[in-house]
View 1: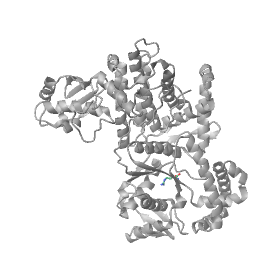
View 2: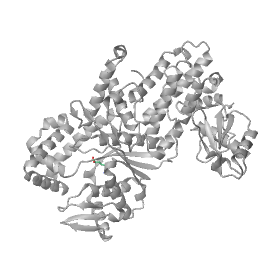
View 3: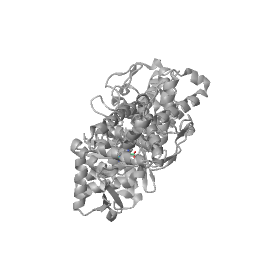
View 4: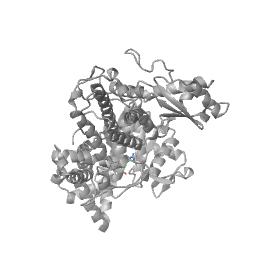
Length: 607
Ligand code: ARG
C-alpha cells in the first residue's frame, strides 16, 4: 500500500525515459524488469525494461527472452525467473510459454494506481470530487519529452479564390491533431496557415472583378464570390487569349508592389481570412499565424537562385530559370518565370528560410498531400544543397487521396459546404429515432458537432497514407466505429454520472478500497487500457499517425460498453463498491475526453 508521503513506486529502480508520475504502467514494467534482471545476471534492469512489451489478448506484459542474448537455453533462463518469483503488490503471476514469459499485474494495485493517476493529473489535488466537478487541469497522457523545444507546423493552407478541396480538409484535420499532440508532449507549438494568396490567378480575379465583381456579394461571402469571379473569368479566358495576357500584366504589377494593383487584393485576402477563421472555429481548429505565399520576400528567393546557379544547377530555358535535380532523381523544376515573376516552388524555399530566421524552430512540419511529394522533396533538397544547417529539421507529413466528397447538391467546393452537409445529414440521421430526437436540447448545434466528429474520425481512422472513399452514411452512423459512436459513448458516461448523485461527495481514490473491483475482468480491462493512454500518445508522436489514438478511443468505448451490465452503480447497496465503480467510469470519461480533444474533437456531455 502506498503511504501518503511516498508514491506507490518509490522503491523501484529509476530507468531512463520512464516516468511513473505521468505513466504509472512504467512502474509496473520496471517491477517486472527488476525481477527478470535479478534472476538473470548480468542483465541490467534498464536492459530488461526494454524487453517488456504489452502482451497479446489476456496477458498484461510479455518478455521475449531471446532478445537479451544471454548465454544458456531459453527454458533454463525462464525457469530461473519463475523459481525466484514471489507475487507482490505489483506483479501477481508469471507463466512460461516457449521463448516468452507472460506477467499478470496485481489487479487491485493496477486499478487503484491508474485511477489515482488520472485523478491527480486531471484535478487539483484535494479531498475528492463534488457533484458536477469538472476537470480543473486535465493533463493525463501528456509528457514533457519536448522540453520546450519549438515546433512550427504548417497545415490547411487553402488557396484564396479556389475551392477548398478534401486535400485541404485532410491537412486541416491531421495538422490540428499533430499540433495538439506536440503540445501534449511539451513542445512550444506555432501553427501556421500558409494561404495560396499569390500567383497569376490573382491577376485573373482582378481582371474579372472589374466585370463580374460585386462589393455586396463579396462582403456576404468572400470565399464563394471570389471563386465565382474566378470561374467566370477563366471561362472567358478560354475563348479570348487576351484575358490571360491582361491577367499576367496585372500580376506583374502586384509583384512589383504597385499599390493600385494591390489595394483590392488586400481586401479580398482580409475578408477571406475572416471567413475562414469562423469556419475553422467550428472545426475546433486554430492558427497562431496566417501567412501566405504573398508574404514571402523576394530577397531569399533571389539568393536561392543565385546560390543554385553558383552550383551549376540552373539553366536557362527561353528566359525562364530551370534547376536540374536529376542527379537526385527529383527531375527538373522551374524556379523563375521568363517575366521574372516568382513561382510556388521558389516561394517555398524563401518561406522556409524566413521562418527559420523568425522563429528559430527545432523542427518544422509541413502537412501536405502526397500528391505534392515531389514538390516538397524538391524544395527540401534545394535547402540542403544551400547548406542550411537546419535543413534536416524539416519534415513532410503526407497523406493519401480521398474520393467522392460531394454534397447532394453537387461537388463540395467550400469548407462551409462540407460543414453544412455534415450537419444536415447528421440531423436527418438523428430524426430517425423520434424519441431520442425529442430529448435533444439543441438539435442544430448537436448535429453539427456530431457530424464534424464523424468527418474527422473517418479521416483519422486509418493510416494517413491510405486513400479512402468519402461516405456520409457510413461516417455518420451511430453504429460501427464512427465519430457519432464515440460522442455517444462520452455522453453516456456523462449521463451515468448525472443519474447517480448519491455517490457524492466522492472521496479521493487514495481513500477508496479498490479491492472490491478485483474480481471483475471488465474493471481490469478498462484499467489497463486507461493506463496505456500515455503510451498511445508517445507512439503517436513517433509515427505522426492519428489512427493509434482513434483505435485507442474505440477500444476504450467498447470496453466501457461491455462493462455497463455488470459494473452497475445505480442501486448498488454497498456504497464503497458504488464509489469504486464510479471512479472507474469517471476515469474512463476523463481519458476518453482527453483522447477526443487530442483528435481536435469537442467531447459532448448531452445529446
Ligand atoms: N496552397 C497549396 C495548395 O492548395 C498548399 C500549400 C502547401 N504548403 C506549402 N508550403 N507548399 O496546393
